[in-house]
Length: 229
Image 1 (cartoon, rainbow, N blue to C red):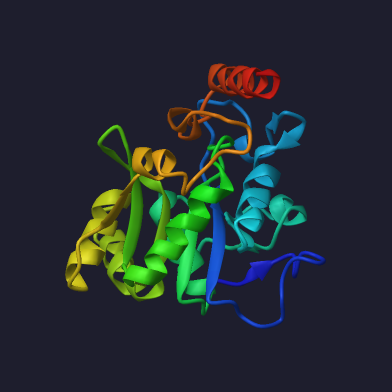
Image 2: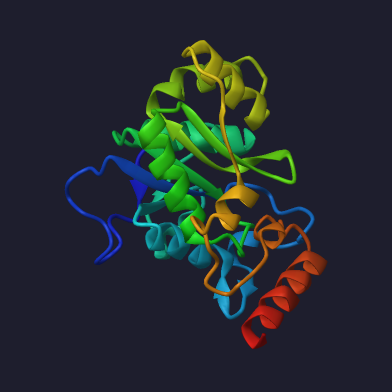
């Protein structure tokens, strides 16, 4: 699993960092009708926005997806076996880096703030958690996720066995390494001022998935209202 497109000028270092960021962009975008990664949101492709969020969080950024046209935004990690869903992208990305920690975000969460990713990574480092997720209104979100690289063989085992659900695989990996999944309640982070949104968006908006055209319009309305309030 090698990066395609080389280093993105001015953003990557020659020394492997202890944490790496990855955008998951390997889906078929069937509901959108066109490649979601290249769909424009407030004038920028979703892939470019996701990459910028990772970099704003202090991470190097790569894109987990086999499409070379995304290499203009960041290095692209080839899927070892395309078509295996997000967990396949996670495994390929983890195999491509020597960093001890990896932060994953999907390409279709354009309202996600960088401060949440940065806090999740700090907490993962502090607790040495294998898997760090966050919850909203009591529901655990599968992404964003911070994974310790030691989870890779366990995640690959689940993938090979045909158990491709990300959350269930994350949970299995944590338990097999003697832990439970580390879950951070977003509401507590916001109320304590540890995580903020630069546009003042509510936390519930951060997790809006842009899967179809109507979702894209809704996200645009939310973003516009925040900018004028």
